[in-house]
Image 1 (cartoon, rainbow, N blue to C red):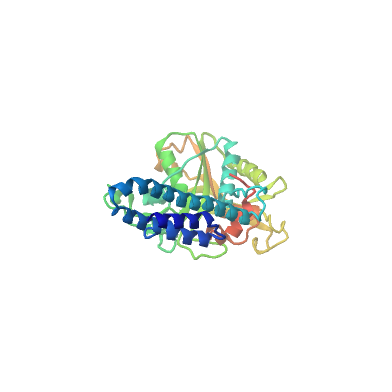
Image 2 (cartoon, one colour):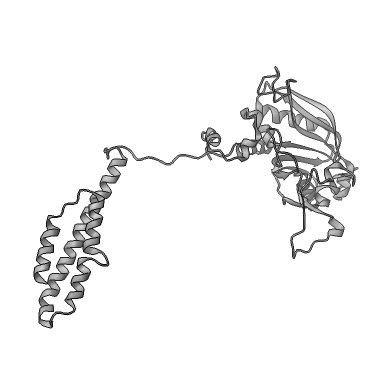
Length: 351
């Protein structure tokens, strides 16, 4: 046994691996579970007590030598691996982490919120699964309104185990607009209200470059005494100038919404073609960005607000449409495809 240790010691001392593969072969041969050191310790058990006193120390020194040889060379090959990755130049600076960027929809949502905050608006939020009362009935949607049809709305069953009064609140659905948050806000407090309701909404529509089955909205609400349509126009005019620049033109067109009267749609001069006509504006030079109007007195009465004392206005816009115009993005499907090539274009807009 002594002669074996002497022989193996000489082999270890002269061993100089030239690759990680040679070092691994060495480890298996000497330090593996079926290696030489394991065999020597098994053989050591059978020697006489007198020999154990002598061979025990020699065997432990041999084991330490084998482990040290492996560890020294392991560090060497780790260093060489790093050197190769650095182009053999260890003085080069390390590679830093890439700075991420916010999603363009998040950037625009934040900008919209910041603009209205300067006018005193606060942010309010609500659930994405809504009952019929908050999503439709309280907002003056008649029973026969098309928005209640399955073609526009994703209806869902109530969550099992919850105490749901379906007789009173009717069917449940993925909210079709964030106007439901306006109802909850007005039910829970007293005027004045000046709030924004950003959030995701759902509609059963075919997915295309101009439409999706889910998208994002920002709605606004202002209720107080003596609120007029002129207040609404000046608020939205300020918003457009802040978001798109002072040269942006604005126009209002009469429209209809169940929860506002009078109602209007607001257009701005197309930011993509500058008003000369393109696919986005359908060659008209104008793009609709939001709907708005004075809150219908029936809506105020539904949430126990005196419609003879208080008036108010509401507006709502799709964040995707606003983002399309701000960054000149022509296909809103890009927002939900998680294509890194698309998202990296917004890396300069850091968190």
